[in-house]
Each structure stands twice: as structure tokens, then as C-alpha cells.
Length: 257
Image (cartoon, rainbow, N blue to C red; front, top):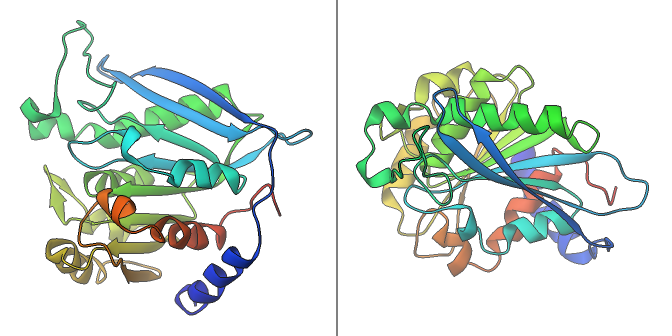
């Protein structure tokens, strides 16, 4: 059981130093959604001589935030040998222009617009998979999502034939802006869930209790010492990124392996 070895894996992660890459490759991506909305993303992976493929971690941020709020997590994932794909969800960060180049914020969006999030994410992943097929390895990948990003991850995973090995959910919700998770979670087979909530994140803890009933495989809950929720937990709990990476390393191969 993954839950039983999480602490041991974290201990080994702290003992073993990360490998040293010779640099980081960064690619800014612009992907049109199915309705012409411009979705922005950034792909990063370590520059390692002779290394052609990297297991990939897709990051989906919180409602009202953007990919720039992931603190040190992306850099630490890259240092461990993963490729990192950070996506700005529609109406957030740099993903704010529709097909008429009119700027749109998440604050004024309807649930119909939020319903397009899973398709947007699939569109970006398919683009990266096709354009970087000698670099990014989507046979071996994972989602990390925060609140609405976690909901989007579950819904997007159901739309992709090559399922993620695991989904890490920070402050999950049952239905955020109309993105209803339980049924889609029940449809996911062989995808373990690692759910994280803060010490005072009562809504997240309540959602975890409910969602756990629908999980088809492992649903492991973890309480961060941060008195916060969502991505802010990473800012207030310096150890949390290591806990997340420890979990991810149980499922994905790293360039240090």
C-alpha cells in the first residue's frame, strides 16, 4: 500500500541528494482551444546529455491564481529529473484572450466557460505530446492540481486514453464552478489519489471524506501543517513540496534513476 511507504520514501528522498543537470530547457506554448480561446502554458525539463525522454508532471493552479504561484515546486520537480508542464487555465494568468482577442477574466466567467477547462487541458497535453514526442513522456506522467485545478485534473484524466499514474489534489472540492468530480472520480481506474488539505481547511477535509467513497483505487489523505488551503499551503509549509515529490517518485521514473 502506497500509504505505508510514503514516510519511508520521504526519508530516502531527504537522504539522497538530487542529481545535477547542466541547465533547464524552457518552452513557452500557445495553444488554441476548441472555441479559439488562447491557452498559455510553459514546458520545462532538465538539460541532460543523452537524455531524450522525461516523465511529465502537469500542474493546474487554483481558482484566481496562475502558474506563477507554484512556489519552488516546479524547480524541485525539474531538479528530480521530471519535465513540468504548467498550464494557465482559461481566464487566469496569460490565458485571458478569446478568439476575438477580447480579454476575459475568470471573475466574469460563467459555469459554461469553466466547463471547458478539461478540454482545454487535454488540448494542451495533446499538443505537447505531438510537438515534443522525443522529449516529454506521456506514458509515464501525473497531475498535480489545486482546488479547481484538482477538479479539472480528474475530469481531464477521464478524457485521455493514456491515464496519469496518479493525481495529487490540493484542497479538493466536490463541485467547484460546476465542475462536479465524484462521478468522474468513480470512472477512473488504476489512478491513485493523494489528497492534501491544510490544518484549517475544513472545506477541503469535508470534500476529501466525500470523494474518498468514489475512488476506485488508493485515496490517501495528508494534512499539511500550513494554516492555509490550495497553493498557499506550499508557501506556508516548506516541507510540503518534498512530501508531494516523494509521492510522485513512487509512480514515475526520474532521470536520476
